[in-house]
Image 1 (cartoon, one colour):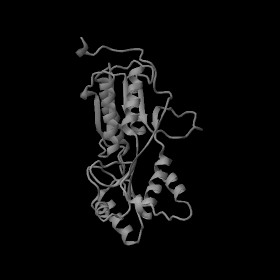
Image 2: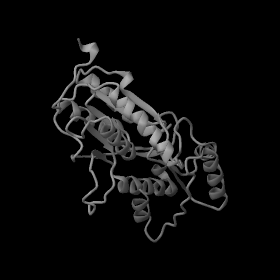
Image 3: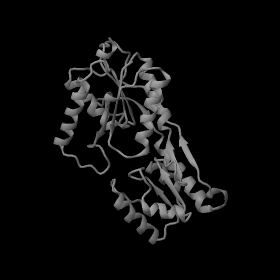
Image 4: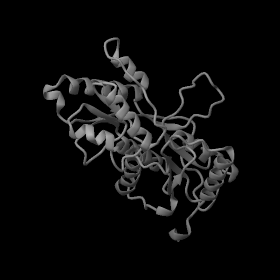
Length: 280
């Protein structure tokens, strides 16, 4: 996203980059300092979407140019640029169903951002559209080792892989998983291996995003949703400059950027479906 943002800014627009590392308090401090320094507009990737940081909300109420990046606020009159998270999650989940995986799991971090809730919403909708039973017990959504600003030691990561191993072992009938981020998918694959299951022979995994290290032939590649992150950055700059320019550009705009679906090594047709006790 930063690459696209800087590319769109070009030589005429000066960009100052600050990082809050997931701290709302730090976000407030940085926003206030930037405004005092004389910025003309703000692009914000907030650490939570439970609320807009107070310093940012003050700017919105003053009609100061603000664009939220990679997040969305349904009830706040602020422009935002974000991926089609719900639609992509639905597509990914339906793809697993099309492969014959009729009992699915969902893995996410404890992140309090709209991207996670939207992806979960797409996962749920796919179950309804495809008439597949949804089991809340097959959803693990409180992992913390991958949260922004986390400096989780190896012991904490190992503990969460152990939790994932137990989660996988608890129901052998679950053969397909949607995971909200790449690093959690890596941990889930390790958990499957520890549970004696092969990916994709026994279990299929689809995640969001993936490293682009194509020169690394040893890197296991997951079937994934590929967000157009450079385009997110570009569209955020475009929208902010429109706001700064005034006129019709000051209207609130919610801009959804399409994602791609990339097939790789982590998914295959269901070959061994264990019968769940509830299915008789």
